[in-house]
Length: 231
Ligand code: SAM
Image 1 (cartoon, rainbow, N blue to C red):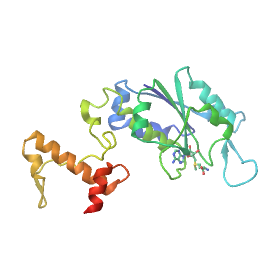
Image 2 (cartoon, protein in one colour):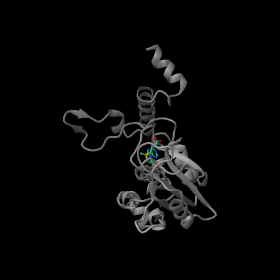
Image 3 (cartoon, helix red, strand yellow):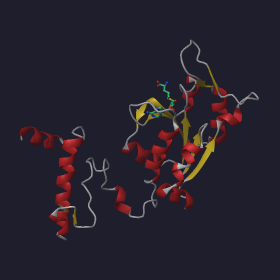
Image 4 (cartoon, rainbow, N blue to C red):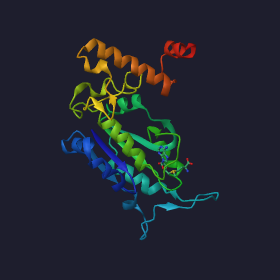
C-alpha cells in the first residue's frame, strides 16, 4: 500500500512510523510512505502557508493554494483522500479494515486553527480519531496509519493475530499472561495451564464477555448486559 501525508511537519509522522512493526513493514515494502509539504508550494519568499481568519478570531488558518498544490502533487486516479479533523467521522476498527483494502491513501493534516474550508471537498472522507482536539493532524495520521498497516496481509507474522483481538470479534479481548506462572504471589489462571484447548477457548470467551460488559457495555451482546443487570 502507498500512503502519502500532506503535512507541514513530516518528521512528526516519519519518525514514529520508523520503529517497530510499521518500521519493518516499510523496510519490507508492505507500506510505502511519502510526504508532500504545503510549504514547498508557498508563493512568497517567507514561504507563508497560513493567514488570519476572515471574520476575526484567534489563531491562524492554513491557506488553500499551498495545500491544494501539495495534494495535487501526490493524488492519482485510485487515491483515497482523508482529511483529519475533530469534526469528522470517528475512526474505528471496521474503518481500519476498509482502509487496509485501499491501494493509495492520502492524509491531509491540518495545523493551527485548521485549514481553509474550501479544501474540504477534495477529501473523500473527513476523519476524527476521537472527541478531543490535537495541535495538528500528524498524531492522528500516525494512529490511523499504524492501525491500517498492521491489517495489511503479511505485516503481522501470525495470520490470526488480528482475528480474535479487541473490536474485531465484537468483544474486548481476554487478558493475556506470560511466564512466570506465579508473579509476586499472583497466579496465572488455571484454565490457561490446563493444555485443554476447549477449556482455554471457553475461559477466553467468558473473560472477554465479562470484560466487555464491565468496560464497554455499549459493545456487549444484549443478553449479557441483561444477565449483569439481574445480578
Ligand atoms: N479549530 C479546530 C476545531 O475547533 O475544530 C481544531 C483545529 S486543531 C487545533 C488543528 C488540526 O489538528 C486540525 O485541522 C486537524 O487536522 C487536527 N486534529 C485535531 N484534533 C483531531 C482529531 N481528534 N482527529 C483528527 N484530527 C485532529
